[in-house]
Length: 289
Ligand code: SF4
Image (cartoon, rainbow, N blue to C red; front, side):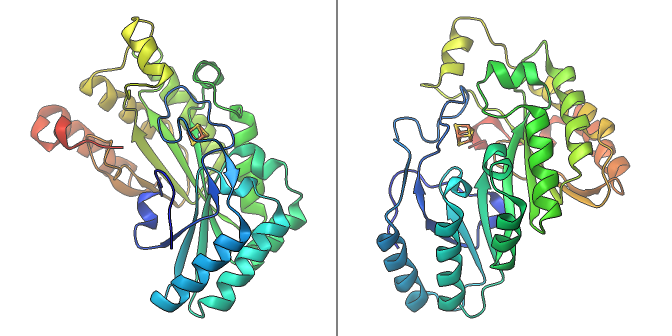
């Protein structure tokens, strides 16, 4: 159970055994993302992965959930993922679910039969960063996939029996593009209708290209009120059924949780209250990536 570099995982995988199967992210070009800067992407040697699984099976034999890190581990060849999933099943008799991060291209590039096989072998949930439904924004921040590619990826994963969790990034449209970013993101996720949806809030981190743009005055972040308005616009425009929505990530000012569309009014009322009572918002110093 050894780790190299910064290892991240979605909040919902907090209780999972994190198994690093790649180092870094194969794209590593998004201008807002500090996570793997300076890390050269590489698959982790399989023998090391196997050694870690063996060690974990002795230390935490009752593991029910495993998360495969790093950035977009689904880019690994399917045979390699199958080998890892097989070993996990053999090593953890109570294993219920394996999660993984993916880019749209990782899903779109695999035939459906392969995705179905991975699902049958325990790959239960895939986390995808849509970030924005606005292609203009996606191009500007150098995301790898277009909005349409992300929509197709989520639909394909669902069709193959894998739960999907999609992330949008509040603030990424900047101050001027804020409401357009909210509306187009809502439109995209409504077409996807993922099982889970999270909104995170952009933090402009020193050392990233986006921070340099911000310093040059080429990017302006919406203020706290602007971000609440963006969140309100986003939730109002979402047309989702049975999708668990959360803003519980530490980057957000206002933690929300509900099922869309059932809880839309309650969530919108909470946002309205937060406009009146700023003490409901997470203080700046407590925000984190
Ligand atoms: S694809 Fe994800 S992990 Fe990779 S650079 Fe972009 S935001 Fe960061």
